[in-house]
Length: 127
Ligand code: THU
Image 1 (cartoon, rainbow, N blue to C red):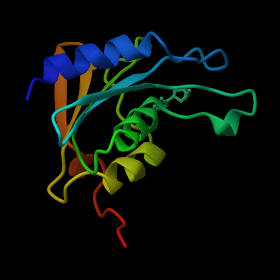
Image 2: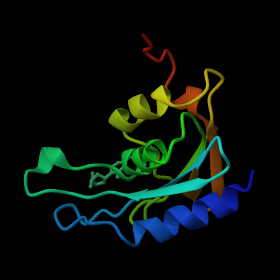
Image 3: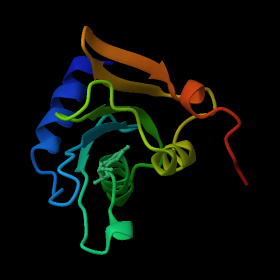
């Protein structure tokens, strides 16, 4: 799996961020089980609670294109080194990732950081 490519796509997606309120841009790229890549950026709203994070936007794109599972996710913010997913996005990632977890890739000062999703979200809730 090409984590560097996934990160480059997350970076590209962050350029489309609509974040006039927080000025905090985020981009995400997920790899679907088909092998296709899907991108998302955060987009905010003047009713702040309606903001959608980059990760959920990317996952929504994957699902809209017929994916049932995601195999990896990269997240990038030009405003923050090592930008891991928020709690709401962790719950959404858990819905579409394998029980053994998936790689969650961020960009730290010394390069890519790869964590297993289950480290970030232990004891996930499932029906
Ligand atoms: N944000 C994301 O896109 N992903 C995260 O995991 C954390 C937060 C966005 C939401 C909001 O537009 C901005 O970053 C500041 O919270």
